Amino acid sequence: FFFMVVESDSEPFGSVLVVGLSGPSGAGKSTHASRLKDSFSSKLGEGRATVFHADHYFKHPSPPPPYRERGGLDMESPSCVDWDRLLSDLDAETSQMEAKISHEGAATEGGRREEGAETGGVRQDCAGIVIVEGFLILSSRPLLQRLGVP
Image 1 (tube, rainbow, N blue to C red):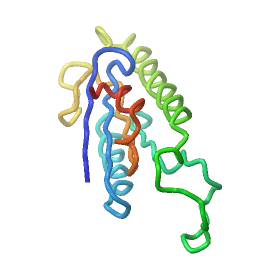
Image 2 (cartoon, rainbow, N blue to C red):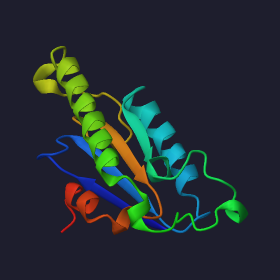
Image 3 (cartoon, helix red, strand yellow):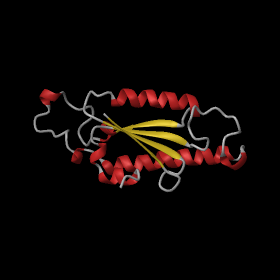
Image 4 (tube, one colour):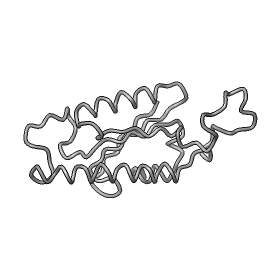
């Protein structure tokens, strides 16, 4: 499967690290996203790592019907995903993480963690980690543009 990390000190994500995971169904995207979230949460603190599952943004009924009962229900094309809602939620989450580190920054010099703070190799000024996973994420030009991919 495909693993993508986009790190930006400029808008729209500031000091939030965004990680994209894509690949075919059953490749382990959700499992790896969950493990990454747990690992980063233990290094950065609770609420500083989250996962966006593109499957949760499908326009189909929830939960989706079993495969044999789907009939003509299309669940395999990019048009099935509510990209606008995913991007809106992504913006809101990254803004919350930025606000949280700004608030915490009042207690530490320059908004950075105290010298020697253990972050497990993550930038000391990292507000948080957002993991976006799904087999269609690479097909969304607006999402790729938002992540800074040319």
